[in-house]
Amino acid sequence: MASIQKLAVNSNSEKWDQFVHNHPEGTFFHLAGWQNVIHNTYQHKCWYLYSEDEKGNILGVLPLVELKSKLFGHSLVSTPFCVYGGVIAESNESKQALEEHAIELAKELNVDYLELRYQAPQHNDKFLTKSMHSYFTYELGETDEAILAGIKKKQRAVIRHALKEPLTTNFDAKVTHVHDIYAESVRNLGTPVFPAKYFKNLKQEFGEQCELMTVESNNKAVSAVMSFYYKNEVLPYYGGGLSEARQLKSNDLMYYALMCHAANNKQCTRFDFGRSKNDSGAYKYKKHWGMEPQPLYYQYYLVKATELPNLSPNNPKYKMFIKMWQKLPLWASQKLGPFLSKYLG
Image (cartoon, one colour):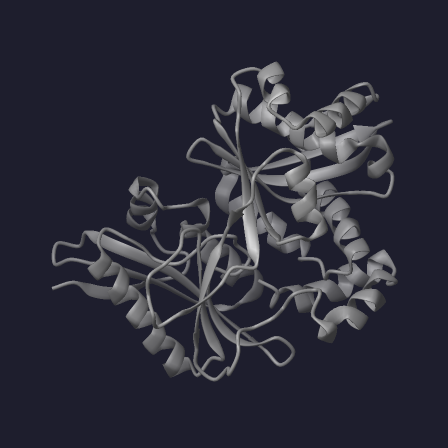
């Protein structure tokens, strides 16, 4: 008989991570290290569930985190702060058992809703599906020239322009430098920033799988990105640029240089540009590179909620807040942002 267990925070997760590594649908965001990072940064309650047989072999895993806020509601999510999540299992039986357990847990916790973030369409009539985001991937060529040739013509011209600028790249940047640039970038978008502690914990937990990069102009970092490496894939995850980055095209150079670096030095064959809300500015920017959007299938089980959640910046409920946030001094946004962003998973 299979049983469902809970992985303790900061415990030995070797068996969990080995299962994720061997499973074809296992992603970087299924790794147990995320539980440590989220708990140690935000103190959210984590429910990292796994199914095992009588011999102790793992049959499936489901990372879950409970988010509870007066402003944004009460939810159980797989996995907040991550693009992908949901159950990965050896069989449909194990998958269904973990999903059923998650539903019962959601009822027990009396959350508004349970959210499972899948890449592929699911066939479970107990859940409602929402597909408001897409993700973008790009197959990396074997040479810098091949990588550039595969990019859409107009974006290729932008990169060639940036290559003529006196810009330098640093793939061993400090967490504080990357976070400071990211903080200013998201403040300009009207979004609360994650705390520097979160970035530090990600780097500490994932080590060489987490890389920090900056692009400099006249010895000043103007663009920065935190990237993850997993299964021969690079995922630029938290990135941004200062106001001068637009004119310098340093963000464009940054992503192209990262592609080349990942292929040449990290044996990566794939570039995952992450998710963007459909038809948003980021969505259009990624399409401009020539990458075709792939829809994400987020599933919801409503417990207390009567309708699907809408945490979109386009939601009229948040539009005035966004405008106010954009006008905040940088120091104020960095001070106040972490109190809000911990619930914006």
